[in-house]
Image (tube, rainbow, N blue to C red; front, side, top):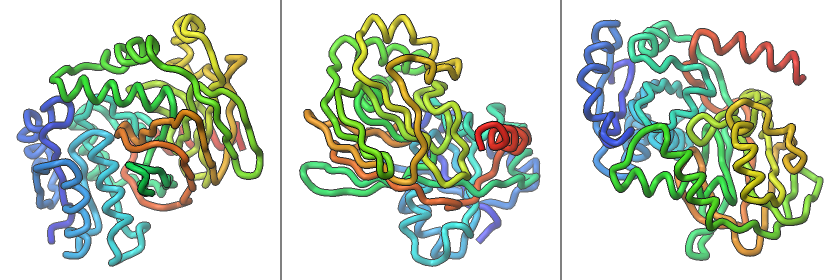
Length: 321
């Protein structure tokens, strides 16, 4: 095997993966990165490619895709049985719509700087989340590298994914989906167990983060530290549509926890049951329904990060302990 195995999602970013891959390939070659590559052909193909590559001896991957492709590679890393997940390194060249994992880890958005970061090999061992959920009454399990959401957050992700499938593109997709979902969404009565503490009531949205960004640049977990072994959990109690619209800027400026109906916690394990059922999204991918059990897996996988990331993590750990 070559040093790196590159997995390319041609439909990421509404086709940006296919359009930009020749340019990215040339940059990888220019920076003397030794690699093989495969282009995904269907949903979940990146999971299969990752498992097969690890079995063949590969230990370093580059994702050319969005958050969903990265999520599939991470799940492949956990499915494989050859080596510890900590022995795997993943780099990301972000070509998706939201690219929230890349934002959370300060990965440069321009291809040249991103590939320079991969060639320099600045890495970080991050936590990973695991969620148990239900799909057609059958219990399922999925890993996630950045964030997961239930309730309004999950319905926004579903709306956004539907717009992508219809050929829409651009950063405004998430904002459009927020407005569309807001017109029809209803809060659910839920019981949320955050480690040993129980919270009951009507909830609008519940988000858990390893990283701090989700939903195309929203900061719903502004204090998240991705190697502290903890989820940052943001509970949004029932709020009116007008209240959401009036405070929507707080989703993007890191001040969401200043809202009187929104509370932040940290936890290693979170359980959620609700009526009616909450929908679920992980790393922007729409999955099943509640009840959910979320578990934090500390120091799970090594990732390539941007040059400024270590400084920002050190500062946050000093501030938030």
